[in-house]
Length: 130
Image (cartoon, rainbow, N blue to C red; front, side, top):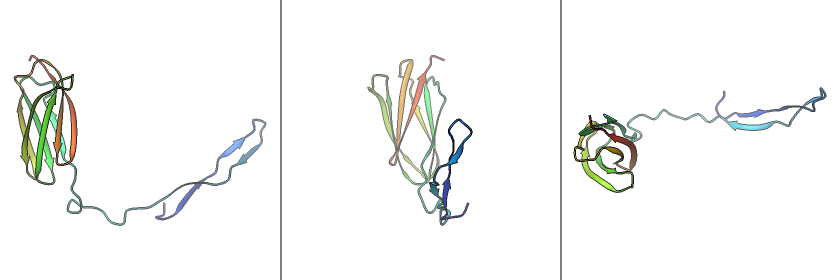
């Protein structure tokens, strides 16, 4: 593939009696390669989040890696959409862990929403007995 080159396709058609023909060329696109590789210094990368254990018993751990300092605001919703827990923590550049004490929640299914900077991440989490 050549940068800036147009690419076309022709379709081969048949009338069912052995006659074949082709369509006019149809333009399918143009290759436009990036002019430079973006490094970590050129752009703020999105935060990488991981929640464990899931299912949980008493504590939810939220690991995240961030390329900038910001705040992480988290909210836990029950299945009716009611807020049952929330909080926030300052996030530093690099690896961060939030330990959320969820021992007061009833056994069941919840949604945890984490807002890191302007990025929202939603997770389904399950509280188990053991």
